[in-house]
Length: 321
Image (tube, rainbow, N blue to C red; front, top):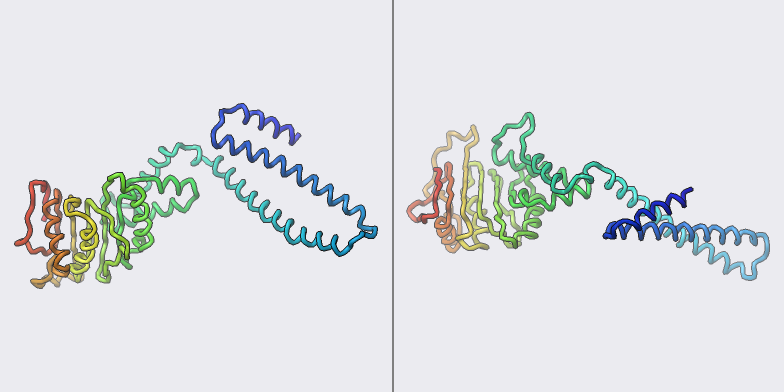
């Protein structure tokens, strides 16, 4: 009955239009039948060999050596590969029978986007950038770890990977691993002239070593949220890396928010040399100044800049100070 069921299934498969998955299924069916036949023949050979175990073999040592070799090598290999095959088949079965697998990737991708961006019942609709990044990338990396199907769909998404999250040691989910994975994914499709956005959350302990030795990608927008003290140097160091690897005209949006924690409200004095760019090299500062000519949006809050050297072009349509 088992063979008749296999033959019936095989006939149905053979009658279907040929595609890669159908060919793979036919190949697996063929290999299964050959394996079953070979194992049956091997068992019969072992049983036939056993019928002579009570007699004297012409070369006993050679026979024992051959059996030992089979037990140590062939049987070990068969056990390992059959066990691995069982695991693979179970995974295939679970994937193709799951509801998530039955959904088109486009639908699953839209569900993922809602999971990333729609606030939960106890979450505010307008989180801080720190909380928003933690929320989005925390959910993203959680979904990537569920199964291969979900990971493939998540990795193929464009919008989440267009944002490069940067954080310091105080940001639980904005770790170098998250930044590195986002940079890796962005390199895979940035050749299509898609915009990349840098979103950085810095605290007092940050030294901004976020891009390592690799060349920073080209960003069309940079958003930085940081503690007040001593953040100006950290912001300058962070800005210097992407500005060093891209033409000034690539940038169209710059947003910097330096905020004070409640216990720091008394720290209102700002030294004259504590302005953006002061801690840059001469060449980096020139690129920083040139960048303002390409901006269409500029948002600054509690940020000190030497305005005497800043010029804008007619591209600027929004400025918030």
